[in-house]
Image (tube, rainbow, N blue to C red; front, side, top):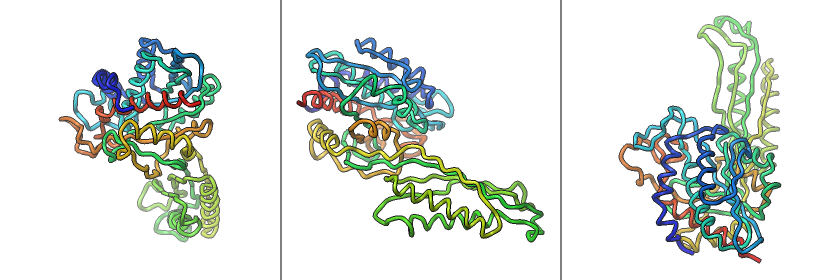
Length: 397
């Protein structure tokens, strides 16, 4: 099934919806306007709408006209990022400090276009569950929707997620089985010593050199403790200490992130961080408080569902336009859905940024960049993929 002509003819309509969402971005768990617009459109098309899952999530249920059967979940995220947009074109964000810099406006538009087509035709047996999820950007909206009974109230046999990806040719797809996105974790370590006048350091237990030793020691975890065939990241990204040049501070705060594709490596990293920080501080006569917070788990695609999605993508755009996805150390809370149901998370190419019209910012068209913009030219491709995937899934015996 190639790109559907019926969807291509409506591409401009859904491009306008996408640009409206882009102009009115909302942060995690604040997507009231976005969710309201999604629910309004779904109702116009005769879709059964359920609101309030995960606070601001929306679920649209489309039952086929050919009776009961299998079920499939299709997920799009809706939230924006706390970024001030540098683009000045007509649909740029109207709210300083908020921007759709990750393309969730486009994800929502693609799934809406697919929902409209499926609701209008309904020539299938079974059920399509369209999941419009809030708070992907750090809020864990997928987890909260599941806690609110997403899969208990709307059982699905499998669930799929689609994310745009700059750098992949526009309208191409990329996917792979196994880990595709890393876990996201953060730490905060407060090294506590004893302050003094900076001219009398012998009266202090200076926490600054202690903190420096800890940061250096952390770099040995990946290079000397982890299996070199496993990928992991330990990054200290913030160091806070002192208020004056002539005062040795009482404490230093270190903060940062840890990323892995496996829980076993994450366990090892956390253990070694705690050991290194504790014993290094003790060796200098200081001590430390350690907080290690595990946020999103790794996103791990199921093999059978990934191969199924690959075949569907190849039917829509051709084998040559389907690539192997390079795993990213970024994180994605679709991981929670894949822990509950089999499925796959895949990428659709957003291109190199040449689609941006006059008024775009000087920066690159990359995710989480203030000059980013979603490529409306891929809406029909993404929506056609969603329709093809849903219909093919429901037709399986």
